[in-house]
Length: 348
View 1 (tube, rainbow, N blue to C red):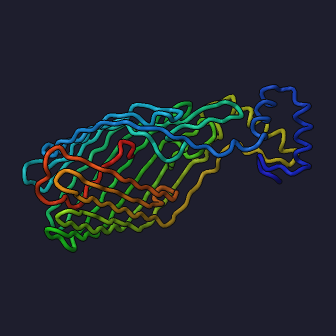
View 2: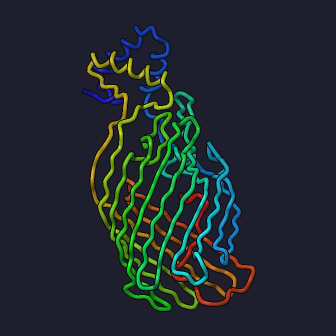
């Protein structure tokens, strides 16, 4: 048997004959769109704009901008966060953030997609919500915990919600004025209300398991000189993923109904027309590697970059960035450790 869209000559002849005799115009149009071939490769480009403000003494950061203009969908994004100790000199810290961020998992979720066969457009998803973190660090060891809630919305896609929580502990194996080496243990849990990890009309195209659990062993190294600061962090562990089955068209009952009728009709011709994406339940190895560095030229100019590799969300992802930063006031003192690279307003 052939899967939908992969017909042999005999099946295609049978399909064309049934199409010719089909009196339902909705089914006929739907099938012609679906069997006319793949929509082809898609890509999109755009220019993003954002402004940011930071007050280190207050632990305050805020930014406001737009997802890249030129994308199929562009929208306002931004956030505000506070990260500071409870009292001056305290080893206890708290962090609170509120944000609206684009979901950059795929072209569908970030830029939006268009089906040239039908003219349908969908995607451009944002995550809207907040996160709270508490931590303790006495220079010998540290512990932390966090939790977050977000609502995910997009254009012609099913709305979703996400809850996440995590905790961890780490020890300083080396901690002096210019070097740090840490090792620890981390636990993470994430839950989405709906599986929106596919790419047909109505799906958001982002990783969204109903249950995701991971346990990892993170190791980090940081070092600084008078002009250079860099850090390398990695983690290896075990992750468990549970995802529900989901309809091909979760946001359009009419299209899903037509697909079900078509599936029943063509099953007699030996043609499999699936009506939903299957779920999954699996356990495997999770890993990530991140590196960042910043170099100071003179008293005002800094060149920095970052690199990331991970499979911690059920896919292999490579990220990278390069930036040039200018400070209006002369820089005094030593480079920050660990390095704190510039973060894009599109960071999740």
